[in-house]
Length: 400
Ligand SMILES: Nc1nc2c(c(=O)[nH]1)N[C@H]1C(S)=C(S)[C@@H](COP(=O)(O)OP(=O)(O)OC[C@H]3O[C@@H](n4cnc5c(N)ncnc54)[C@H](O)[C@@H]3O)O[C@H]1N2
Ligand code: MOO
Image 1 (tube, rainbow, N blue to C red):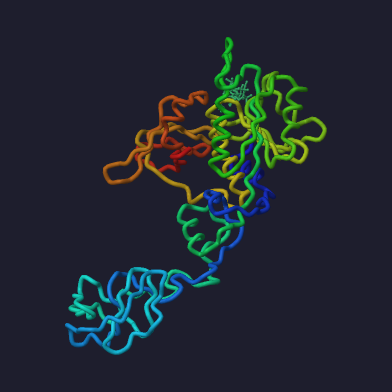
Image 2 (image 1 turned 180 degrees about the horizontal axis):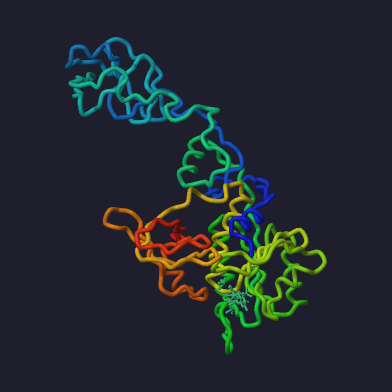
């Protein structure tokens, strides 16, 4: 058994970001930007009004009230062609270009218009309600830096910068293969002693959520030749993830499959619970992550190893931030040699801090407990008895 940190390092060793491709901004949400994005224009392109009101010269406003002559109108998108001279004002609207000669906007609520004149009662002073050219960004400025997962706000900025296409990392193609004679597809008849393949669907969902493209290879029976055929079908993918058949029984065939010519086994067994019999290797050119079959083991291993790998393939750091911490709501017994990932509820204490409450049952077949959990409590190997209140590392499960 190797430690979790070593297994992660070996899985991530030498993983390079996938090549980039161009997509329209409408298709870019959640994709990882592969190159810096520079603004193609200056925003606002000129000094503009931030309010509906009057474009004036500040020098004409002393003393107040001041009556000015209306010489025209500047709606948004239709700049006023003339120049505001002494004693003159232009009716202006939010977003419209400030006419030449004017340096200030006064609110229409602070003015009275009568005939061809406007009387200004109040003003915020020179430059008030004017957005200077380039307030938001200037042409050529980098608005979005490479290696970020594009959010709704990022796409709004790209659009405002008039950049309709973005270079993003290609989505990792992840082949997913369930194994086991007893495993059936969701919705199919379930024979005696059989189990529905929750793992395949859950992994596909996780791959999608992390920006990958899942490719289902179905279910391989517990037969070496059939399994080899299914594994070979992953050719052309960036990664193959299998579930089941990773343990020690005669029907657990993954290790044997990774001993065949053209395959390689890098390591087997990690000091963790759940998830001990994890394998890592290659089938031809395709890296393989062999996850244990127990549904909770599959998903915890996917969180700990597959998620960082998918992030690395897209040019992101393995974790999306520093580890989170919470206090224990109940005591925990001393741990053995395996790093534990305990399913736990997550609550807010009265002082606003996080409280993690480990579930009493931690069986790695129990998807109901995993679905009910708010976090996993990470217990390092050989951690001593921990009384309630002890601070521990947690992996939040929201959205997962
Ligand atoms: N003598 C030992 N037995 C076991 C050991 C051990 O060290 N010595 N390790 C145990 C641990 S820990 C785990 S985890 C499991 C993992 O074994 P496998 O990866 O070989 O998984 P299977 O035996 O194929 O299946 C385990 C369990 O999960 C169910 N399963 C399988 N595939 C799916 C799927 N796609 N969807 C839902 N459920 C699935 C399967 O029916 C079994 O119930 O081994 C222990 N044994
Ligand atoms: O790793 Mo197994 O996941 O302990 O059940």
